[in-house]
Image 1 (cartoon, rainbow, N blue to C red):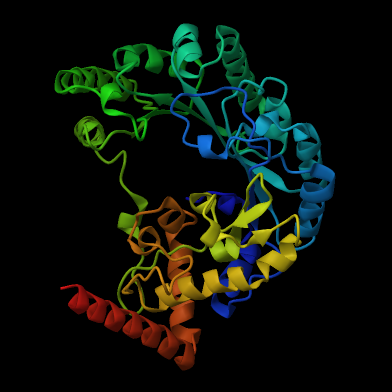
Image 2: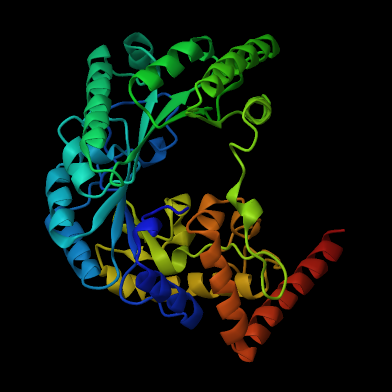
Length: 429
C-alpha cells in the first residue's frame, strides 16, 4: 500500500519521515516532488479539465529543474512524479530530466501522459524506477480519438505504439521492477455503446488496470438521457461480468454519480467478485486515544511544482493563489520548503491530527485546510499515501510527544472558530 514512491522507502527513511511529522521539522527538501514541466499539450481534448492552464509556460531545465533535483537528492528527495496542465512527455528536456534522475538515483515513480510521445521513452522510464504510468487513451479507435481529442488518426496510431512500447519494456524488466500500466477510457454519451471495444483494446494492450472514467462538467446536451443510462448500465454489466469471469479482473471505475453509474458498477463487481474493492481505510488501526488515524502527511512528504514555477502542497491546489508555497523563479525549493507558507500548512494539519479530525473549518482562519482535507477518506492523499500501520505509528507518537501548549493552542483556535461561526449564524438568522 502506498503511492508517490512510499513503498520504496527503507525502514530508516520511514522512521525519518515519522520523526519529521512528530518533531515538525521536514528537513531541507520533500521526499517526493510532483513536477508539471509544461502547460503545452499535443492534443486538444474537448473536455480538458486543465484548459485554464493551457499556455506556453515551461519550466527551465538548467536554471530550475536540475538545481532543484541536485539539491533535493543531497537531502531527502527520493522520487518525482511527472504530470501537469499539459503533456509532461512533450517537455523539450524530457530525456535530460530522465537521465539526471538516473544519475542522482532519484526514481521517476509516476507518470501521467497521453502516450503519443512514449515509444522512445518507455524503456528509459522503466529504468528510472517507474511504478505506475497512467495513460489517457479515452477512445477505442482512431476515428473516435481524432474527434474527441481534436487531433488526427495518426496521433492515435502513435499512442498505441507508445502503449505497446511500454508494455514490452515492462515485460522485459526484472520481476519486482515492472510498472503498472493504467489505461483511462472515457464513458459518456458519445461512446458508451463502444464499451466492449474499449475493454477488448485494454486487454489486448496488456493494461494492468482499465479505468472507465466519466467526464466532469458536461453541458446538458452532452449528458445521457434516462434511456441511454439504462442502456449504458446493461452494457457496463456485460463487460464487468466478462472481466470477472477471466479470473484476472482489470476493470476499475470512476463514473458519473449523477447517473448512478458508479454505484451500479461497484454493486455489480461486489456481487460477482466479492471483496475485490475492499477499501483500505476500513482496516485502519485504532488511535491510541480513540478516533481515526489517517490524515494528510503531504506537508512533510511532497511538494508540487507547476509549469509556472509556483510550488503547491499537492496537485489538488494547483492554480489556487491562496494555496501557494512560493515560486521557484524567486526562491530555492529548500527556502520554500522551510518557509512560512509550508510551516503554516504543517501547523494546520498537525492541529487536525491532534484534534483527531474534530475541527471546524474556517475560510478566514485556515489557509490550506479545506473541507475535503478534514472529511474522512475524501482525498486519496489522506488515506492512501502510505500503509495503515504508518498512520497508526504517527498517531501514537503524536499522542505521546505533542506538548500541552500545542494541544491548548489547537483547542483554543478551534473553540474560537466555532464561537465565531455561532455568532455569525445568529446574526444571519
